[in-house]
Length: 317
Image 1: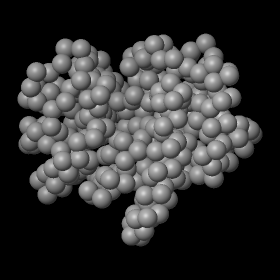
Image 2: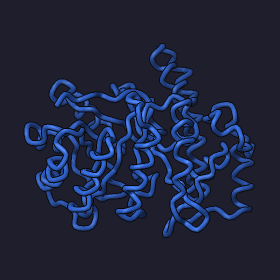
Image 3: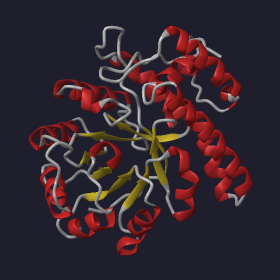
């Protein structure tokens, strides 16, 4: 298989929910248009941001089907779905379903309950899933802060080399720049290394990153396209300034409770994706009001994502 290196911003979408916590898939066509119109080149669905671990097998299939239908005919917009990691048989079933509905690629995390004891065992897990869909690109999702699986990824590449022909690359959500650079340079840059930390995208670009997957690309994609443009034009002062804006925005995620704050940002721009499921906590109405006021002080409306599909919705700011 020829490995395609994806370019630009790939958003990690939130899974839209109704007020009762059920899926609200009717939002996905407008969600796709939002991402597309703001310069995203793809979507990484059912991941951490998409609450994949909180969705049932049937729900993950419905989400995949909705994104496949919404993006049908748009070969330039790549949809990758996370198929899990803990239960290999479920991951294989979801991968085969993704192939049936014609998504671009599948991704897999390290098993996080019974963790692989060695990188060789992790490679065998990857192979089991990848072999089930040999014609689809397969990405490993490296996020040790959540999985607890933290081997050097350059060692994983060495293990799968020649053993997993459709191993396309890694979604790298970690801060080990030494390992990341080694992965970028492995076998003359063979593998697609998608950067997964929005708050230090600039540092990854310096090392050679060409694409990134991030949650804040959902609602602030113009900020990051501006960062990438500044970097490629050699305007590092401007690029650093934009990265600091990103950091200031991301700090509010932690201040207001973590990952669920991202859905609050989506509500601000006019696409209400509901709340996160338990055990993640969500903002109260009073907290959302305070959050909205702080967001306004960031100048958020100057760089947030916008879409003609959301013109009927009122931005909170």
